[in-house]
Image (cartoon, helix red, strand yellow):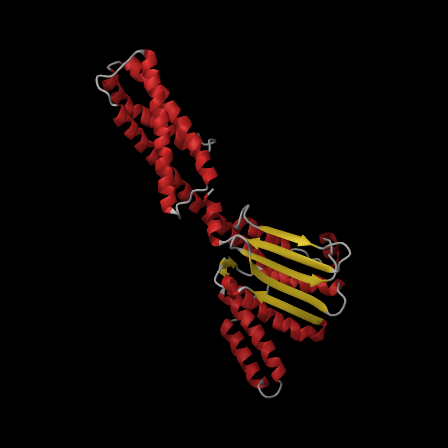
Length: 355
């Protein structure tokens, strides 16, 4: 049975066990072992078929345990319908065979079968959510490993944090009053290193943290390139508390700056906009003036180039399988490259993991 999917293993074992346990009751009702065996085979096989169809129906309806009232109402309604079909066919088989029981337990059997289908449905959603949680944990662990690969593409302090921040504070104190233009640059660099160290082992951070850190990064870049770099950044306030993968904006912005400088006329224009998507998730767009450079050309220009987006794409696939997008556009005739990422809302992400 190891090669059989988990759902079908539960189906086979569950209905086989129920058939064995309910068989003595049918013998008492019909006073015939042979006829009880026939009814057991028919009813439990049909129950197996009905619940297999229920799995498809529940999937199509998109029912979630996070919305208990619609879930319970749907389960009860569907279970009663299934019980009615099941009971009607069982009565037809009994009448066709010319057998009757000593009593008329039709209503009791109907209620019992409705309860059976209800319990099956509750177990289905409970086990599905449990397996989804285990699957999500495995994906997060794998994503954490992928995140460690991304560390080579970002600034990581290799010295004692206390020494680092003491050094920044000393520089700021020396600059104060002497070279005020450099104060925000050093402060931006300090803030970015602080964010990097504080979230070194975090898979998820808030969008606000990620956005503020990238602004610190861009403060340093602006001081470096001055008038040859124009920056336009925006974050919808409603997205500040949304959880996103840590350090996912940095490779986008770094690529835009790095390859934009190779092909863009001066000044290089960089735009970072984060807006709310139609589904309540986030739409992240990073664009730069200049032309698209094919990955092969990137690798020929610099041995380590072209890996940032590949690592990011892999991380997103692990964290949001089948529920996100990463698209790159560079319209012919335009000197503009845009990377667009769609991240699902937290509710959508959880729902996808449950499938």
